[in-house]
Length: 254
Image (cartoon, rainbow, N blue to C red; front, side):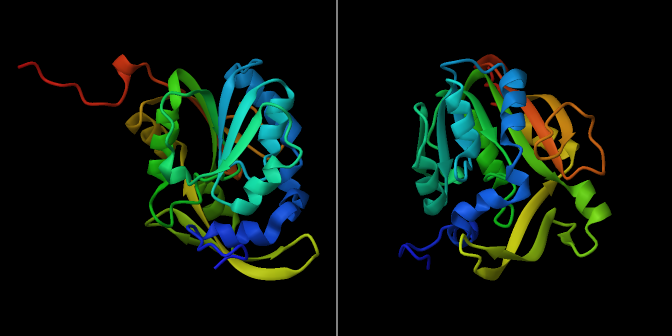
């Protein structure tokens, strides 16, 4: 049970609760400005554009987007992270605690982001990544854009000597130490769903998303570099199909 008395619905909740604001001390969070600047350009975001941030964490990307006049709604399963995201949020940024496996939105957003294993990639221990993708696709209006990062299976197999990578499921398990804001350390397990570009394309095709590009990226260095086996993350950019071209099976004529 978590410190606020509710029963965790996902293994990541106690991790986020312990980390709190200390999450923002990790080096991978320091490239927010470059990442947001790239996504604004790549996705064609403008003032007033409505963006859904799935797995928003403490709100670093949502805050930066809203500061540029973009309207952002962030969702995260962690009560602690949502609480932090709401603090000092600029106008145009709103947040709620919501399970990404149960997104209720229907064609409400011009764009969606799901970055740094924000929900997608943390669900595969239960096999729910596809559910997350489906919910994001439904949340987008036709023509809406998606930016999503996924951890690379290639990188884990090639570079992580101590990885416990399950080849049957594509899920990597690691034991690591995390520290809270006061420096108190605990050891915890992390599970990360890992993907190849081909798997990402197949997932998108199954849920009415047309892949625009897949790039190898690093935190704070988003761009259009072709996929490699030596970069930890892939950045997927995709577009929601129009209703006449989506993934639903056509009905036969009587």
